[in-house]
Image (cartoon, rainbow, N blue to C red; front, side, top):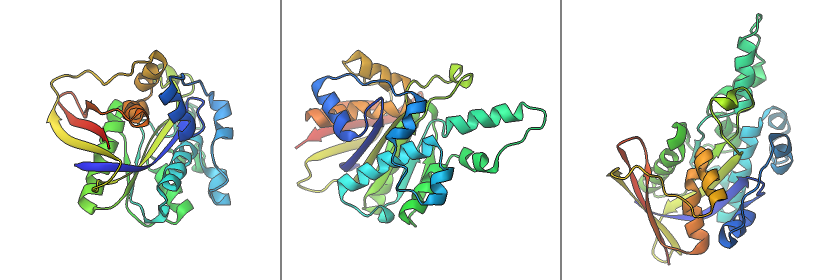
Length: 268
């Protein structure tokens, strides 16, 4: 598959948008830390309809903030884009609260919290917000979530010969579940992916392959490497780094223990 990226959105690790993230990656500035109680102020909730604004959780707002930035950068109508929403765990705050409620004697769960616990909640809120009637795919594949999401979006773009919106996003668990699944930072990366055309400035080549080297593509900066390893959505960071630096790069992303795909980035 030969693809190009026409828009990027980014929020997380104390970086408010893609411009800040690109500057940090380009100039070797380390990502920061964004506590969960400060995350809400960094997210664009005002674009949601009033009813959905009251109900949407932080995970949904995180994903949608990155999506809006990517779609605006691409100059496309969000209602016309098929979408792939990929998250390793979904809304971690809602899941933690639901598990705690089920451990109580009465086992009462709020209906609003319950409907946010489903894995396609964020794509539903996005569809309502932008009036989308295109297909939406929700994916969870633990640490391989970013790879599976990128492959799915690439296939949809190639087979449909049209742009597709991909967002990969993760939110840390509150304690005590954080001990079992330690995601270190809230992070969302959104890409508008489309079939590559002659003259595109940047191109991605994706091809399925057997994995002979299971090691992940790392990053030279230790802080960025920690973010890549400690947040499943961070597996896309080496690609973003290559793009902002204009450096050709080849690496493999695993889909499971034996298979994956070769990914190469080639700037014009």
